[in-house]
Image (cartoon, rainbow, N blue to C red; front, side):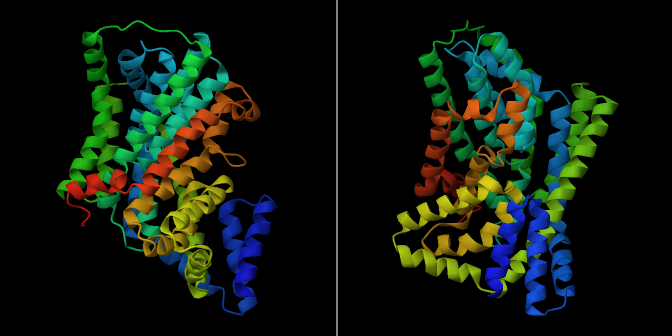
Length: 430
């Protein structure tokens, strides 16, 4: 009965429009009151959940991404991407995909990615005669690579939700190949639609121009190399790498590029504080929720439910993906990771999936939810920039949605995409 109260109250609060963090906390409070336990138990869980040193990586990664967003790095990445692929048919669409991927590596946030790239690329594509629905779909889907990049704070959240079964040093390189795979699939979808609609062909500016624009963008892109090299070499931890990323971002935007202004710096700091506050609140209340799920053996019940339907790993992985996708359509990315990981990770591992691979599958499912109403954060941001309705964008979304689904299926059923690089680097055994 207590588990029913926990589930139903959470669902009712969500349907009433209560923010996810408060819905989680209120559902936990309702359950504890029904059980007759002291409320202090929940608050102790909440405080212990937030009071973890490695969580310092989250505000640092968020702040680093915001500094890159407000520091004008996007323009240099766009110029490099355009010089590289802008001459192909539908060149601005392909430029958008490459630029979103590169900036996603710098910002580590799909929302920041679509905000920065959308503000630059969508008006540019509109001026060149591209349809707005195409511009939005290209931007919102390509920006999802930010969730898989080394600077992604959602990776840190997953390592903690996984209960110590996955290290940040193993998960961070695991996202590189899937991010490249997603970029390639988005490039194919963007090119297919461009050919179908007869978008223009550009002129190749020559390799010297490619080299010059790459040199201009390189200092911004080096933040990914610094983080990966530092963590994998053991020079610093994920938390230390995040603080180094902030220091490097400040040096880059203030002193090297000289594009950061004091008002924009304050905006970046304020945005980082707000995002960090939301994430830490989610972590705290989700720890309460996880405590109750452990108490009522939800993971074991879910495993039994999945095995009752099928014992075939292919079917089990498909069911897990469907359930994660449904959760991601109405919950924030961080909340989905924190709540769903303790439930589905044991079942996935029992079916033969490596926890590092499951982490990438989880992030891809959450990214899919970011582009699907009713939450659809990245899609709403892209539509707001373009001044177009979500309904208009959804009517032509299938090729781009197909690219994301293909990436998800490949990462789910071909472990090599997420595990080869960590194994080569020696951070994952087997």
